[in-house]
Structures are given as C-alpha cells and as structure tokens.
Image 1: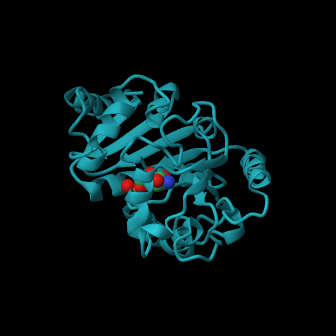
Image 2: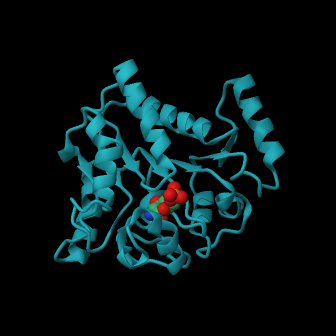
Image 3: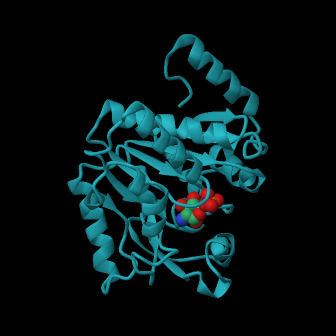
Length: 263
Ligand code: GLP
C-alpha cells in the first residue's frame, strides 16, 4: 500500500485529479470507477480544470459509480446520478451513455445488481477505482461486517452512515435506508485503487485501513489485499497513523529513485 500524506484537502484533490488524468492520458479508453460524497468534489473540480486547460478528452472513457440509494429516481436531486452529472459529467466531453450508476429505483433490484456486474465485465473491468471512506471504515456502502468477497448487491445502511450523509438531504427522515453498492470483491477486482480522505473524522478509519488487522469489521482494511492501492490523505486524516514518518520517507525515496516504491 502506498500512503501519501498531503498538507491539506486541496493538495489531496490535486493529487487525485492528476492520477485520474494520467490514467486517461495513458489509456484514452480507460474504465474509471468513481465515488460520491464530499471528499471527491475537489478532485472532480481539479479534473475539470485539467480537461479545460490541457484539452484532455474523456470522450472514450467509461465510468462506473460505486453505489446509489435504493428508491431514488435518477433525476432525484439527492441521487448519486444527479451528483455525478452536476459535479463532473456535465463539465466533461464524456457521453452520458458511457457513464453508469446503479439504478436505485429498478423494479427488480437483484437483476439490476447482477446486470451492473456484467456491465463492468463487458467494459473490460475497472482500470482505476476512486474511493472515499466512511467514518466507520466503509468503502462504497459496504458497511462493517460486509463480506470481503461481496459483489454488487443491496445493503442496509447503518444509522451512523445515514446521519453522516443527512447533510445532503433536507431532513434525516429523507435519507434512504438501503443502497445498491459494488461489493468489496468487485472493488478489489479493479486494476488500481486510489482512496482519498480528509479531516480528523477519518483518522481512525484511515489508521485501521492502513495499519489495523484485515477485518470485515473495517471494510477498507480489505485494501491491504490489493497489490496496487494508493491512500492519499491530508495531515488530519493521517493523524492516527503509527508509521507516518516512514510513509513520508518512502515518498521521498520514491521521488529520489523515481521508482514505484511503497506498495
Ligand atoms: C458515502 C459513500 C462513500 C463515501 C462516504 C464518505 O457513504 N457511499 O462512497 O466514501 O460517503 O463520504 P464523504 O467524502 O462525504 O465523507
């Protein structure tokens, strides 16, 4: 696991945007896995900037979002589809029919989950998956206790997750109780993973993900199993890491030697 500690949230956003842009520049037909939540917003803003200033095209990119609330229509103001259209897709040259978000109001949710997995497979799998992290260590909506081999399915949301996400809704009662989410197994199938986290509220989850035991109780710890994961965190989110000095040294070595150390 490579752990990159940045000074603040804007440096985390810039780093993440550069990684995504590099992936698309290297492989214009990339398949990107995308995330929602407050943390990726800055990275998407930076990516839009790069698209405009460097003329980086997303015309051949395919994207798959991690999750969607059950019961919300695609055009619901709080759906993750609306979030992605507003914060990213409408600002890029990507055709909307190359962007996939699970259909939260599908009449048959089980069929939708199976179809989502198939669509990812048909697209050749995800080249780079962007992740945030919940305060309890969840990734996508894989709540603590999720099977480490899980695939796309419906998960009931923990009350704490609903409270954390209530800020996007008019009231707590309106926060859905379930979501369709890629599974941990689905996420681990991605060729590379980039997890971003900012703020003290994420410090415990980040420490568990990077340095805790591998456990379904902290879903992000499953990333320890993957050969190509980068965690990019600001100083506050890094504040619980025991080996922070080592990670900083490892980054300096990486730049000095110009090789990919640190996984
Ligand atoms: C939700 C999303 C996750 C995201 C998490 C943290 O639960 N399903 O993908 O990582 O929120 O979001 P934020 O970045 O707003 O803290």
